[in-house]
Every structure is written in structure tokens, then in C-alpha cells.
Length: 166
Image 1 (spheres, rainbow, N blue to C red):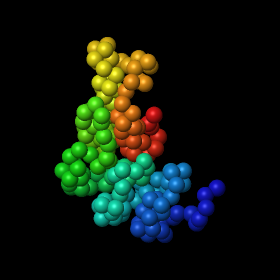
Image 2: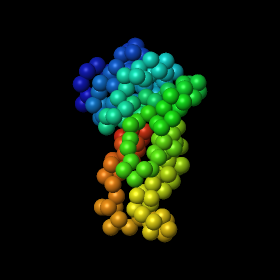
Image 3: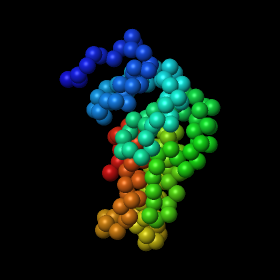
Image 4: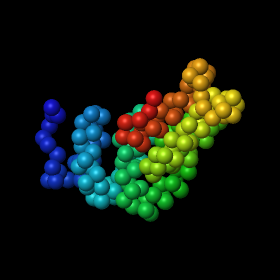
């Protein structure tokens, strides 16, 4: 049972957005439907709040809001991609892997391409043997840099609304 009054059409877009951002992940899932139904109203507010979103936290709210923004407003999409050419979410790589293309595909919800890029990154992290054979042995995972695995996990969690990651 969720606490607080139910969200309905009578709630202002500002209130809905505030509630979504302040809610714990489980309650946020229940608010997602209303958020998506009212995305046209929310897009300008998301644009205004872009600087207040935390690109370093382990939370999927920011990624979800950015996906709504780029889905609704093509100019905002181009502005966002130009403003953050390396991607909005702050990620690092000890192996020197560029995660910007992966982040772009996840932002645009092109999950098939993102899955291919993730598999490729995992093979690169595992080493030349994995790249050559096209897959990673379980025993190779332990040697992968933790920062890269954390980056991949954060990217998928942020842009899949908390559903995917490892």
C-alpha cells in the first residue's frame, strides 16, 4: 500500500514531477504511468530542471526524465546531445572504453544496439581472447576493472528505469 493521496489528473505537472523525483524507486514505478501519460506537459519542466538532476547518483529517475524529454522534444534532444557529447550520466572507464555511444543508444531507447555495444565492451574488458572468440568466459569476469562494470551497471539501471543491470 502506497502512502499519500493518489496521483490524478488534478495534480499539477510540477507536483507530479516533484513527487516522482522525491519518491523511492518502488513508488516511482507506480507514478511512471501518469508521468508517461502527461509527458507533453512535463517536457518543458524537465528541460528547466536539467541542471538540478544529479549525474553521479545511482538512481534511474534522471535517466527516465531525460528519455521523456528527448522523446517529446526533438530540439531538446539535439540540444542535450550537443551539450553532453560524452553522455549525461557520469561514468568512467579504467580500460579507456568510450561509453558515450552506449549512453546515446540507451537514452534514445535503442536497447538492441545498446546490448550489442555492452557485449562488445565486456569482450574488450575480458581481453583479446574474448574479443577473438566473441564471448566472455565466466573466469574472465573477475579480472575486469570494477569501475567499468559499475559504469555499465549504472548506465543500464539509469536508462532502463531500474529494470536492467548486473
